[in-house]
Amino acid sequence: MDLGRANVANEPKKVIDELCNVMDTVSDPLLQMSDDQVLAETVASGENPEQSAAEVKGLLLIAVKDYRQRRLRSAQEEYEREAFASQQRQAALPDTAEERRLLLSLVCQQRPEIGNALTLRHRHFEELTDADVESSLEELQELGTLDDLRNDKDSQ
Image: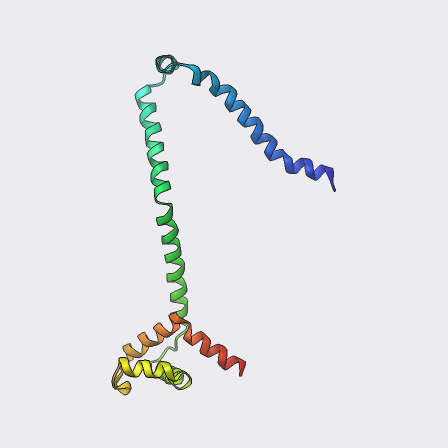
């Protein structure tokens, strides 16, 4: 074991411990002062106690708001990741309506259960509009069916 490295690795902890000791030393006298003494000390140092109180209150409110919104931010980040992934998957669909129809037909041939579901959803499969074909493919893409189809095709 390299002792030089072990000492370097412990340096941040030592620095933090020293800073905590300094903060404790500085804050102990303040904790023992009465409110009136703290107010007098603040005024004597040339600070406006009301302004300082408003600034501290503002910082605390921001911290509380940030804490309360942490789940919201996390959900929003997850939504943005999913939306981006969805756009990437949609970009993988064929460019032309004819190619999309061929792909949907292939899916229905290789996965009859999907063809049956689509036939039930659209009574006359042949009368699907281009938009219906595209939305059906997008849904199948979201479900991972097209990826499964491509993987099956690649493994053959």
